[in-house]
Length: 442
Image (cartoon, rainbow, N blue to C red; front, side, top):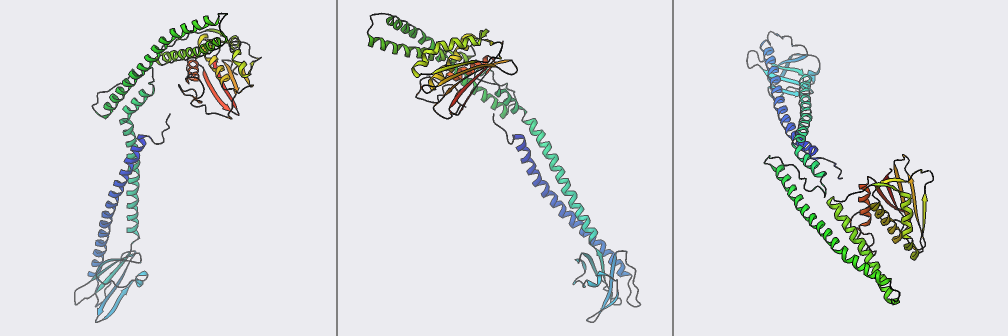
């Protein structure tokens, strides 16, 4: 199954949040600049109003100097020709502040400086009013913090809302995914329910359903071909086999002719096995295969199986080692005997086919630790250190194209075992190939 790194809901949330961040911070930055300008202008107006109020009360002759407000310094002076005559100057930082070039409010050394001039020739007083700019800067920083915090909270809320909305809007897509996930080759006619929404989701659902119908029709044609071809081939092959067996029973048959007939009989046997596999494939694909379960003694089946295949061991000088677990009290399982024999015959024939000459085929039968399952393993030596096993249980897959067979054996084994509510595990390590079959006990 595909592992999702970033779902559509998360992508929508991230995209919406990024857009919202861009717009929100741009808007808040614009608002901050406008409000900052208004606050500075208001502060400037307040300083100038206070400076003018003080200047209106100042007299040069006689000298009258009003007291400044707390945290406010002043300097009172006038020009006499080209000289500047200071009448009064508060102690402190104001001594370091030069007279501005023009009237108004300026910022110097972290202080706000208001410079006003009395245009009355009889009282040509000039005033510099100095006040700390810290309070204004603190207010501006607090405003910036509030706007940033509001933007951050807004982004989080917008992201959460976007995720919830995306989750709601994508519910139909999730329903389509869930419905499509359970569809297999036996359920292609179980189409996805279509809701009349007149949007892209309805179009997507109808398109998927149409595709499923086309796939089902194609698979039905393939299955019908498998079934028809297999049935048509069974009778001619049976007749040919019977005729050849009759000829082989004649005592006066020529030696070379007898060898030829035996070769033909082997090929017919192989074809009959392929036809039988094709029939099983068509039945499995159509869901028409039935199991006739009954109590089966697995140990008895194994002994009969190896007795039957013993002639196949001789040409390659192979030996079979059958090991029954001594602590297992009963080897009884509930299974379809015919289908079970097909599975075991397939696995042992594979072991014989791929084993090098003179090697040993090991068969071990035991019950699992919980005593609920029987476990049968068939192991054989192979010519390679290890082979890929992932695709081996795939229909029509053949690891070695030079070998006979249609590539259906392990796939059929896996499918039939799963119908028995069991499982098949295959592995290849250290020049050893092992098939482990697990079936429920009786």
